[in-house]
Length: 366
Ligand code: M6R
Image (cartoon, rainbow, N blue to C red; front, side, top):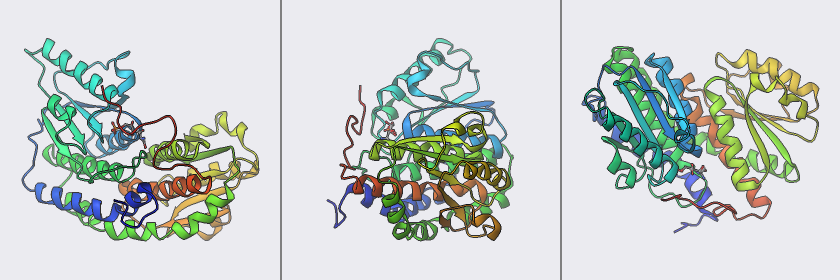
């Protein structure tokens, strides 16, 4: 049921304040009495996932490494068969999949489990599944399941399920950090206070839609586009480019802004717009330095910025989309939304079937 929306993708983007609220309420009750008995002797985490869920994995890697201080490796489910990661008896493996049925991710989890069983004397059954479908095949293969509680997502493009994956992964990071005394209970409380502001801030970001429609209009005939981010928002650059590619068929590349300077910058001219995710955090100065180079090649720049952007840098941008301020680690939860809306409006303005893009289906089952 579209409930008056023209497409499921737009409905699901607009549902994000409510779906995040439901997820937060569920996990808020859990923080004082943890849902999982995650072993405190973990010495590393592996994350297996594909597509948008893989990007949630990259953000989770950043969170766990920075807040828990243990190493995390993220591997695409489709690559794990060819190159399984070396693991120890105290490695936790997390499978992230919206559908819980993606064959590449399921096969990777099955191989992980098989390797643990082959070493059963020493290896622990440390497999965690994060999925929007708690009764899916994934849940049958893991030791614990954390539901993402986003409700049914019909559009092929993952939107609200991605945001809820991030909420669950951040909750998991806090729980792990707390159990290992890597952060204080006061810090956890401060993060919860920030998390509780998300539904209102997501609503504010959704108001940017009126500014995003003309940006989509300006991009209607473009062939290429670059999406740049730094630090934790590098994964959002990849996710934004994926959303643009799959719904609009625009050739969009997501890059680390720093890495982009090492060759790909040669692609730029006035026909290649650059979308820069540049919140005012510790990456901002380096990002602005990169963008000055981008500007010198003539590319129009669309900036996804935060409220406190210095006026002297605002002039670098041809279009500015301002996000509400949020604690730095949580910025991906807001910065992805303008990219979802841009992908949606560009696809619609190009006359494409945004809910069912060509060549892809929602679930890749076995
Ligand atoms: O159901 P899953 O999360 O396992 O799906 C993984 C990918 O196939 C999926 O994220 C795909 O990339 C989406 N169409 C992205 O919008």
